[in-house]
Length: 88
Image (cartoon, rainbow, N blue to C red; front, side, top):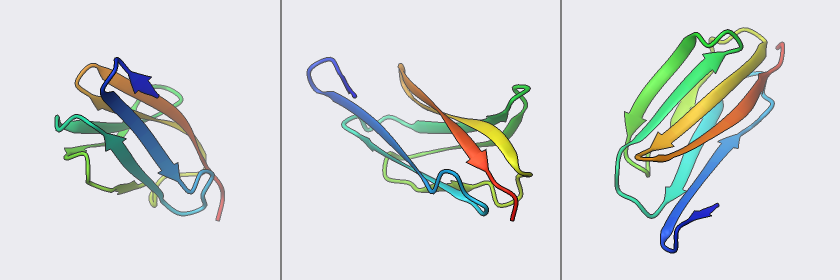
């Protein structure tokens, strides 16, 4: 997605679904801090982290099978993606 004329904010999450862990990467033109938060269907926070736009966020190995949401935020830009964790 392109916001404005020069701002780019792309979020990649893989693998999805998974039986193991998820990896989140971002491609963005901004150098502002990226925040990653994972919630369950009830809105409970299960994982939070923040870092540079080049950081890889890896999580979910300890999550039970189910549906989760990852919220990736950078300044005023936000993307939310549904995650599916399968039984091993």
